[in-house]
Image (cartoon, rainbow, N blue to C red; front, side, top):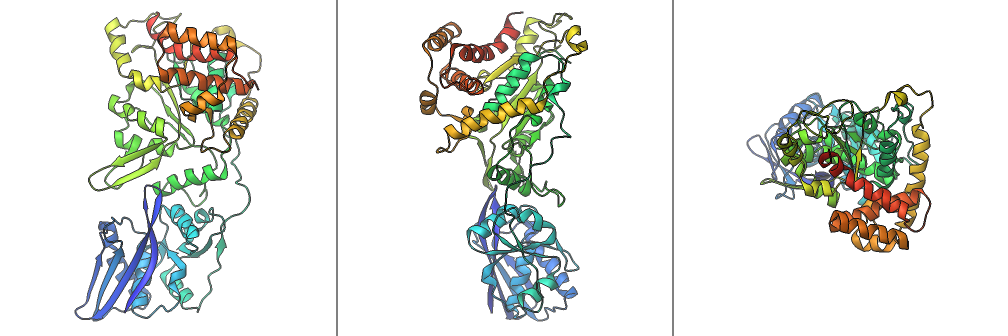
Length: 510
């Protein structure tokens, strides 16, 4: 007898159907798994054997063959344990229910209990799209229930699954959650009011967040670059349910979700150390998994001490910064992960950190400064919309008794500007000004006569590239949105141009 059970695999975060076929025939006892499974998948047969023993199932004088179809696609992970076990039980005529209605996933323990797996959310989404119900570990139920309308049957033991499919025991189903996504509280986030001074840098940070513009902060040590970056989460606009689902899927396949908090309710903030490897940043590895740029999807990727990262590592950022996704191709696999992140980078102006500082003298030679600057290529800098100087804060500002603006006030302006952009792009697959392609820049960035004249002079004087020209217009569009202006005015262009010149001013004019 041959039985069939549906499960699914995941390529990147994209699920695909896997049909598990089992055939049982008389002969020398054997248990063979075919269909291009990895080592973990092939070890399932040993877990299944022992789990069957604890459920009272004997495999005496049985030749069992389990096929994972399609046979030409690599199958990875222990989540095939449960569907393989049910498929064998059906082939043995020990399970007689209608299996075609379910997608199954779960790892078996030796005592027959069913353990939590990673990557359940893409499988749950695939089940709903195909009109199927999901049988999954109880620990994964809350994560899977983020998929609206999906009927989920949480189980904790193989014996429970057998009884449920045979109709001798009921399993109370869960239905994917309805209603709006409840965001987490911001009370525990660092607040912008804790930063004294740095009005220009705060303004630049607000513009960057409002339009999703990449930003680079340049300044001596101890001036507040890291403090500013770590307060960005407090001014980010809330995620929509669609965005939250995308982010949660990335964390699901990475195994970074907990049962207590199975849904990502805040935009991610990732801050890898500068010793990170290429694979750690972009993803991949022997068993492919998302890197930091994908874990920062719809959120912030903060790279402190930017030039200290290996040059080859940060140069890899160029493609995902443009395409908002990363393609990883190796001999054994090819996967694609989303990587729509806001890049926030911080660096010193020179190796010692004090080039241009009013209080301390720079001790670096011109060649030292040149080598330090060469660590970040021109094409990469060109893809960063906003460059801002973060100078030393004067004593008067540090001691000042006035109250700095808090994050809640800044966030309200950011949300208002984000709403303007959503309305502008409601019929297009983008949400922020920074994502506009060149044709849309021409359409949505009308200039006043004064603004056009100012931009023309800036392009000629600074020999700006075509990419710089378009990025200035995008930043200016965001500033105009924050000022609630339909047309881009000269003051908006002036501010946007200044944010493209800071890097050169700091590194060359001292």
